Length: 64
Image (cartoon, rainbow, N blue to C red):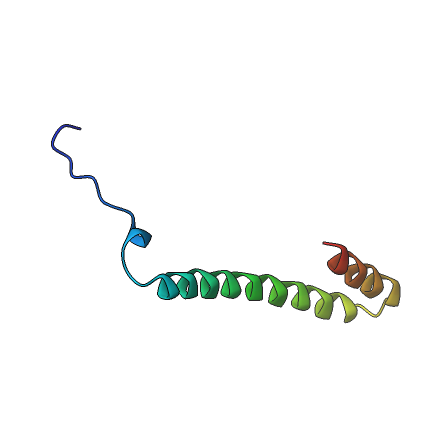
């Protein structure tokens, strides 16, 4: 790859607070999506009407 330009890292220049904020918000969105999926799982499993299943999913969600 002779002659190919090497791109410098995005987080090497600029405002440090902006970089930390951008990375933190990205992580927060991903973590919120995981919690939303876990909540949807618990909701639909609780609709099955078996309390033991709902309790097991809630307990497993706490452990994980």
